[in-house]
Length: 231
Image (tube, rainbow, N blue to C red; front, side, top):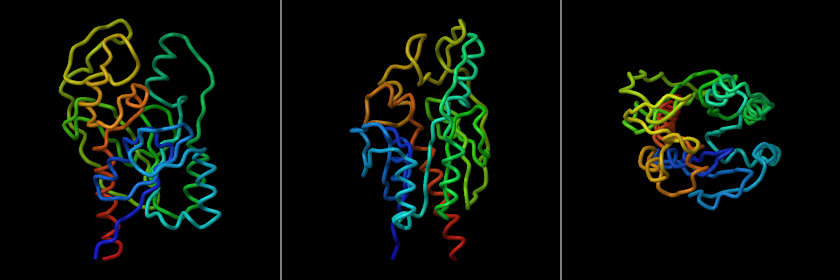
């Protein structure tokens, strides 16, 4: 008899990561500080780290096989860093990666920390790209894997540019720019199609989401790694 694994999805936004785990066969519970009426699974609204602390202290964390976290780290995001540098902008941004990792270690569970390309201080145990899955976005994301491992997939050659303007240059290409507004950025329907996200049409949620294909891959890899441990 196959037991369904449960994953906790912290800093869940609208559920791009959650949907991938669902497609990989997991039961998903999400948590985000904002109201997310479009989130397609069981959902707790609240501070993710406070909620994780509560789950640890009450022992409720034991219902999960895996924890996924996408903590905010605007200071380390490649797009933020590059844009600020080019425009001479600065400022402080929230970085919750380190405190998130500390709590994830305290759970004793396998975990995944997801971050965009940039300066975020995580191990790049996996780097996934839309081209790996035949998507219409590049959307590179790095993943630190805690208490488990899987081989890195090959990173295929990109077929061209991301369509739109950046730093005053207009380019055409096979990928849409699923972030921001103006300058040839993707429309909401274009982003939905490019990332395989159908359950939300909120631009802010789409621009923050990762394609479900990424965590479907991770979920399946985790299941395989877990089966090998218990074989």
